[in-house]
Amino acid sequence: MAPNSAIGGGNAGAEMRRPQINAIRRNGGRMSDPIIAPVLKDLMLFLATAGVVAPIFARLRVGSTLGFLAAGVILGPHGLGALAPSAPWIAAFTITRPAEFEQFAQLGVAFLLFHLGLGLSWERLRLMRKLVFGLGLAQLIIASLFLGGALRLLVPDAPSALMAGAALALSSTAMVTPALSRRHRLHAPAGRAAFGVLLFQDLAVAPLLAVATLFATGRHGVEVGALYALAPGVLAVGALILAGRWLLRPLMKLVARAKSQDLFMAATFLVIIGAGAASALAGLSMALGAFVAGVLLAETEYRHEVEVMIEPFTALLLGLFFLSVGLGLDLSALWVQPTLVAGLTVGLLSLKALANLVACRLFGLAPATSLEAALALCGGGEFAFVVLRHSSDSAILSTSILQPLFVAVSLSMAFTPGLVAFGGWAGRKSVALKLAAEPSAEPAETVKPGLVMIVGMGRVGRMIAEILDARGFAWAAVDRDPRVVGAERRQDRPIYFGDGSRIELLDRLGLADARALVVTMDAPEGVEAVVGVARHQHPDLVIVARARDARHAARLYGLGATSAVPETFEASLHLSESLLRDLGEPAEAVDAFIRDRRRAYRASIGGGAGDGT
Image (spheres, rainbow, N blue to C red):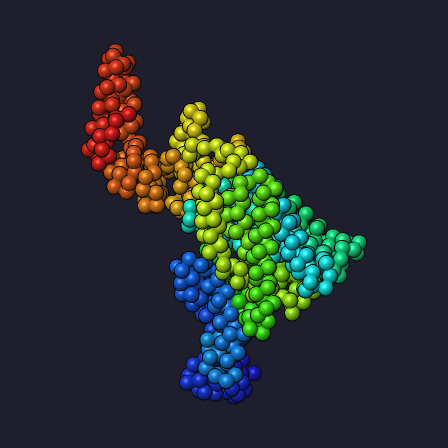
């Protein structure tokens, strides 16, 4: 064979390349791929939505969720896509491959459930057990019965109606929580009740998806054959739990020892997608496997680092999910079936508000508190789309009823910020008319002192922790060394793996409510990074930092440290104090001398006179 033929450079190779060359010439010398080009265009439209449209909706205080939904409707086949046949240029501004978006959108749901699983610590659930497992369960049951009973007029069988009612009973964590927080109502009695219900609803999503699979396998009923068909899924979840118990912590510890942020992120993605894929292969939803993985990781020392790391990806992928939901929304139902859509929306808001009110009153909440919580939770939620779509894929619900339900849930979510505001006003008005709030059956919340945050758990950090324990102060620590973290965790100490210079991680650990931050790292640059970000985010926080020497202490004071303790100077003072005492100097005179020297030294390096102690 000739050399040219061997490398494709002969006549045969030229003939094979001729169609590509002609295609390049027709495109003005540019490479063109019939598959890659539409994908890139759709990706650019999604990123434009995330970077422009969603922030505008967030600025208007209606939530970026509605921004992604609206963008999906506009860019989808039922929006601008419907005009493309008559005006071909519009196709450049439409998403032409919604099916591919739906596949990636499942990752958004999986990441969201994984994120929710990470936040479900047993201690948190124990403290809120009455609101979560009592009020939350009652709300879901009562709302499901109310809504399912009403939907029985539209859905041919009772199990399908009840399944749809349970989906509509879920509220939007992404809409309600920020709305309550903006109005400083999240820690009020109504806010705590609403948060407890939302937390239970988040826990209930995975079982609801499993029940939907059970109904579908049993053909709209729970049959013995359906239970057998679901057995592989139950076994898969059990295997995931066992594998997570035995393998998850060693895997994360192995990756953490490499001290590579990229490898740690890759391992986290492996856990999420791997658990989701195992669940999907067993016939369950990908989101259920991701949720189980999140709950298992929540019990490890890597929880907060993972939570901070995946949060941006979760928000972006969740936006992709809502965009895909918008792509499937056909708002023509608003004018084709206006009575049905209006009836579903009004019925959803009114029946759900009534069910929420009944549940709150059954648990002894005050009328004003019950009214505010009921109105805050009466809108639909993001997980309603997940459960309804899963029910549709499982042939539980027909497309004819699914589209009006999607539109009704979207409209109810749009009303959520206004309903939160109205609920707060109505609750305050009710209290004002009675001149006093009615007593609530909720237990009085004990005000606990803020904890002390320790960054760096070496010899200095451990000594400080022991002193805090001896004096009765609560504390939490973070360290980058997995061996140190593992050793302390084996002694049941509150320490977590992570980079203390990341303010997101410190805030997850409770820095906003902390009494003080102590930075004991031995790397000067690391200490400066922690002090800088903490002072910028929390101007009034007490920050005590370990300094290498006087020059380093001066830089820390410049960054905003309350106190910077130079190692060399403090060691000299302690040596001098011991020497003077051994030489027979009076103890009071030695203490006064050392105190004066410490005060003068602090003043000389920019720390202020202080009290010298």
